[in-house]
Length: 222
Image (cartoon, rainbow, N blue to C red; front, side, top):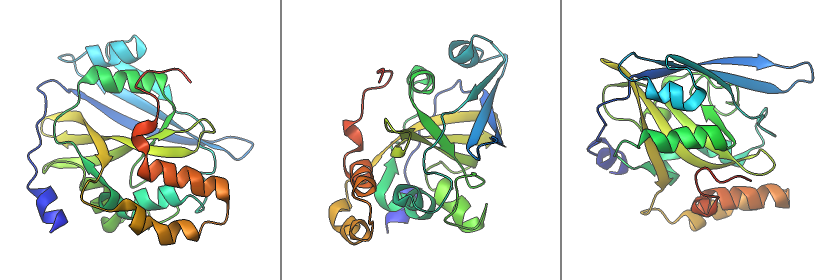
């Protein structure tokens, strides 16, 4: 019933989102991973790239290092890669571009997709995993990518936005994500939290799922 309700959600997209993003992964000599994202803007929508990087047509940004992401120990990432729609829902109105630009410029984050280097939880780019991501995008989308905020220790802490890309026309629309209001998160997570041995990891996971709205405001310096 929940998936059926989600499928009938009316998504509202703004008229000008003529940009797309591609990602490149790299591994440093010390074994840490990093991702570089390249944003390509259409001539009809140059403001996104210009406001993000200063170039009207192309913009490249390297995301923050992600602590404890290369492995299967993060219960928060396990949730996002396995059953994100059980705990989160999308606000079906396209986000103002300035909000996501300020987030990308000022916040610590990683971007996840079914081919992510941080996916140690489900078969790489499998149909099941693609469905898990595409549940957050409107019909006709060809790719979904999760924008996940990091805490002060660069540990994934809150699921903030989703990029939804379509091919016709080629464009990317951003939607805001929020915790589900129809799910008693605390009771569903009690068993999972009890299985986490590290108290700091348990606290981080609990805050990430139950209280994501208590993070800093968009653009706030930490």
